[in-house]
Length: 143
Image (cartoon, rainbow, N blue to C red; front, side, top):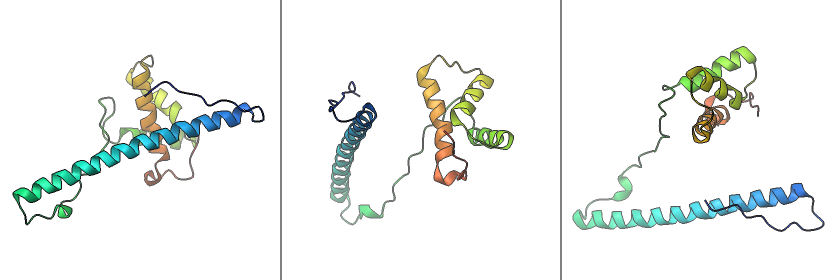
Protein backbone atom coordinates (compact mmCIF):
# COMPACT_ATOMS: atom_id res chain seq x y z
CA UNK A 1 0.00 0.00 0.00
CA UNK A 2 1.03 3.58 -0.46
CA UNK A 3 1.80 5.97 2.33
CA UNK A 4 -1.25 7.13 4.26
CA UNK A 5 -2.58 10.46 3.12
CA UNK A 6 -4.53 12.68 5.46
CA UNK A 7 -7.34 14.97 4.49
CA UNK A 8 -7.13 18.60 5.52
CA UNK A 9 -8.71 19.36 8.89
CA UNK A 10 -11.54 21.89 8.58
CA UNK A 11 -11.51 24.57 11.27
CA UNK A 12 -14.94 23.67 12.58
CA UNK A 13 -14.33 19.92 13.02
CA UNK A 14 -12.51 18.30 15.94
CA UNK A 15 -9.54 16.01 15.48
CA UNK A 16 -11.67 12.89 16.13
CA UNK A 17 -13.93 13.72 13.18
CA UNK A 18 -10.87 14.19 10.99
CA UNK A 19 -9.52 10.80 12.08
CA UNK A 20 -12.85 9.20 11.18
CA UNK A 21 -12.82 10.96 7.79
CA UNK A 22 -9.32 9.66 7.10
CA UNK A 23 -10.31 6.12 8.13
CA UNK A 24 -13.36 6.27 5.88
CA UNK A 25 -11.27 7.54 2.96
CA UNK A 26 -8.76 4.71 3.45
CA UNK A 27 -11.50 2.05 3.60
CA UNK A 28 -13.21 3.51 0.52
CA UNK A 29 -9.87 3.30 -1.29
CA UNK A 30 -9.48 -0.35 -0.31
CA UNK A 31 -13.00 -1.10 -1.55
CA UNK A 32 -12.20 0.57 -4.87
CA UNK A 33 -8.96 -1.40 -5.17
CA UNK A 34 -10.74 -4.69 -4.46
CA UNK A 35 -13.56 -3.78 -6.86
CA UNK A 36 -11.02 -3.38 -9.67
CA UNK A 37 -9.51 -6.75 -8.73
CA UNK A 38 -12.96 -8.37 -8.83
CA UNK A 39 -13.60 -6.83 -12.26
CA UNK A 40 -10.24 -8.20 -13.48
CA UNK A 41 -11.03 -11.69 -12.16
CA UNK A 42 -14.48 -11.67 -13.76
CA UNK A 43 -12.95 -10.74 -17.13
CA UNK A 44 -10.40 -13.55 -16.71
CA UNK A 45 -13.22 -15.97 -15.91
CA UNK A 46 -15.11 -14.93 -19.05
CA UNK A 47 -12.00 -15.58 -21.16
CA UNK A 48 -11.56 -19.01 -19.59
CA UNK A 49 -15.22 -19.84 -20.24
CA UNK A 50 -14.85 -18.81 -23.89
CA UNK A 51 -11.71 -20.90 -24.28
CA UNK A 52 -13.43 -23.94 -22.73
CA UNK A 53 -16.31 -23.54 -25.19
CA UNK A 54 -13.81 -23.49 -28.08
CA UNK A 55 -12.44 -26.88 -27.03
CA UNK A 56 -15.81 -28.34 -25.97
CA UNK A 57 -18.89 -26.50 -27.29
CA UNK A 58 -21.18 -28.63 -25.13
CA UNK A 59 -19.59 -27.44 -21.91
CA UNK A 60 -21.59 -25.16 -19.63
CA UNK A 61 -19.03 -23.36 -17.43
CA UNK A 62 -21.73 -22.30 -14.96
CA UNK A 63 -22.11 -26.00 -14.02
CA UNK A 64 -18.57 -26.02 -12.63
CA UNK A 65 -18.71 -25.28 -8.89
CA UNK A 66 -16.34 -22.73 -7.43
CA UNK A 67 -13.53 -24.01 -5.25
CA UNK A 68 -13.66 -22.23 -1.94
CA UNK A 69 -10.38 -20.80 -0.73
CA UNK A 70 -9.33 -21.38 2.84
CA UNK A 71 -6.94 -19.27 4.86
CA UNK A 72 -3.44 -20.60 4.84
CA UNK A 73 -2.42 -22.75 7.75
CA UNK A 74 0.28 -21.67 10.10
CA UNK A 75 3.11 -23.81 11.34
CA UNK A 76 2.65 -22.46 14.86
CA UNK A 77 -0.79 -23.91 15.66
CA UNK A 78 -2.40 -27.24 14.82
CA UNK A 79 -5.85 -27.48 13.32
CA UNK A 80 -8.42 -26.29 15.88
CA UNK A 81 -5.80 -25.29 18.43
CA UNK A 82 -6.65 -21.56 18.30
CA UNK A 83 -10.31 -22.34 18.96
CA UNK A 84 -9.38 -24.66 21.82
CA UNK A 85 -7.19 -21.99 23.41
CA UNK A 86 -10.03 -19.48 23.18
CA UNK A 87 -12.48 -21.93 24.78
CA UNK A 88 -9.99 -22.54 27.60
CA UNK A 89 -9.56 -18.80 28.15
CA UNK A 90 -13.32 -18.34 28.10
CA UNK A 91 -13.76 -21.13 30.63
CA UNK A 92 -11.00 -19.80 32.92
CA UNK A 93 -11.52 -16.05 32.59
CA UNK A 94 -15.18 -15.76 31.51
CA UNK A 95 -14.17 -12.96 29.13
CA UNK A 96 -12.25 -13.04 25.89
CA UNK A 97 -9.49 -10.61 24.98
CA UNK A 98 -8.10 -11.99 21.70
CA UNK A 99 -4.87 -10.00 21.88
CA UNK A 100 -4.09 -11.26 25.40
CA UNK A 101 -4.91 -14.87 24.52
CA UNK A 102 -2.67 -14.59 21.44
CA UNK A 103 0.19 -13.13 23.49
CA UNK A 104 -0.11 -15.92 26.05
CA UNK A 105 -0.15 -18.57 23.30
CA UNK A 106 2.90 -17.00 21.66
CA UNK A 107 4.75 -17.02 24.98
CA UNK A 108 3.78 -20.65 25.65
CA UNK A 109 5.07 -21.73 22.22
CA UNK A 110 8.20 -19.59 22.36
CA UNK A 111 7.18 -17.48 19.37
CA UNK A 112 9.17 -14.22 19.35
CA UNK A 113 7.00 -11.15 19.87
CA UNK A 114 9.64 -8.96 18.25
CA UNK A 115 8.61 -10.01 14.73
CA UNK A 116 5.70 -7.67 13.98
CA UNK A 117 4.46 -9.64 10.96
CA UNK A 118 4.19 -12.91 12.91
CA UNK A 119 2.61 -11.17 15.90
CA UNK A 120 0.05 -9.43 13.68
CA UNK A 121 -0.80 -12.68 11.88
CA UNK A 122 -1.31 -14.63 15.11
CA UNK A 123 -3.32 -11.88 16.83
CA UNK A 124 -5.55 -11.57 13.76
CA UNK A 125 -6.17 -15.35 13.79
CA UNK A 126 -7.34 -15.22 17.40
CA UNK A 127 -9.42 -12.09 16.74
CA UNK A 128 -11.06 -13.67 13.69
CA UNK A 129 -12.07 -16.77 15.64
CA UNK A 130 -13.58 -14.69 18.45
CA UNK A 131 -15.49 -12.28 16.20
CA UNK A 132 -16.56 -14.73 13.49
CA UNK A 133 -20.37 -15.04 13.66
CA UNK A 134 -20.27 -18.78 12.95
CA UNK A 135 -17.76 -19.56 15.69
CA UNK A 136 -20.34 -19.78 18.49
CA UNK A 137 -18.80 -17.06 20.60
CA UNK A 138 -21.74 -14.64 20.24
CA UNK A 139 -22.32 -12.50 23.29
CA UNK A 140 -18.76 -12.99 24.50
CA UNK A 141 -17.17 -10.18 22.48
CA UNK A 142 -14.50 -8.12 24.10
CA UNK A 143 -11.86 -5.83 22.73
